[in-house]
Length: 183
Length: 275
Image (cartoon, rainbow over the protein chains, first blue to last red):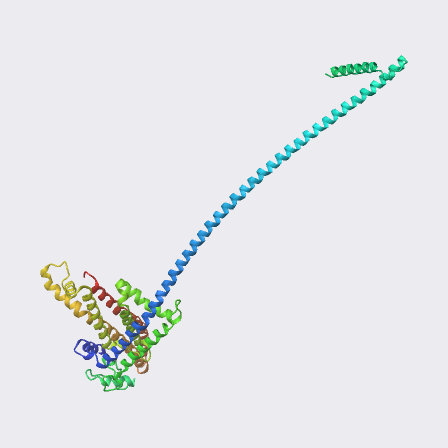
């Protein structure tokens, strides 16, 4: 029955389809207040915040990109420096190796030279000593021979130039024989 | 129930049964003609419905002013909730339907959506318990404004001749058919749109209110007055009332959404080149 009442009222010319003046007035006032609120207060602030947020996010992205580029650059620079340092180090190492080799060669040749010089000196000295000794020996043998000859002959042959030349001749013959025998 | 009783007495066009003790009084159309509570006899007299309008307008103002008083880039609390609600209208209705035109109309669309939702939801909020949109005035006001906005937008976008021609003489139709099509298009676009917007909303909120009142008064009557096994129907009635309350919450949101969405669709249709 209630439903019937509602339906007849709604489909007929009932006042249900005609707004009451008070409802229209309060409804309009509410609408005006609310649209003013959204128009002048809510959306300006909301849009401002959205804009700010977008800027922050975009700014963040730009900053991140810049930082990335800087990092890339730094890495490139670092790598280049590293490469340079490595090249330099290997150059230094090569040079040092070269120097070491040179020094070694030098020391070696110096030592060889020294050895040769020493050898030479030793040989020279030996030769000199030998010749000195042989000279000494010659002299002593000459004196001995002279003395022996004097005793055999019975007279002094000292200071005799002839005797002296005979002895010298003899010794020279001896020397010749010795050198021929040595050959 | 004394207040409701008095309200019913104000209605003279539908005689009501009831009033006698021990007799069931069904809800009636009188629910939607509440008596004046304030300023009676003046143009500004306030009924229960008008008080609800003022109250909900205040609630919306307080909420949105609180939410956006000190807006932060990282939203918290009320601002977070307010932004979510605004984004629903801004993105899911304005941008979805209107694209880049959405920015221009989002203020009106948001006003309509939040106003209608706030005025609808009072149907389930004690002690208000009636939607401010269950009387015809506010839906009618908004439907008329929507009608004005979509027509003005269309005329501005295309000029009045082209706009009327596009709406009344859709291209690709054989000439004689215009005799049939043009009156239909005229009635449906320029007359029926505001009417259907209004009636869809009012009828939904009225029906919801009547259902709630019916089930809960029946619950009371059956539990207190009925005897024996009939009392059990009181529990069934209460369950139905509860279900209707849940449904009413959904309807409150849905009707606000539909009204706003259709407004956006009408504006989009008026702005578009072809119809």
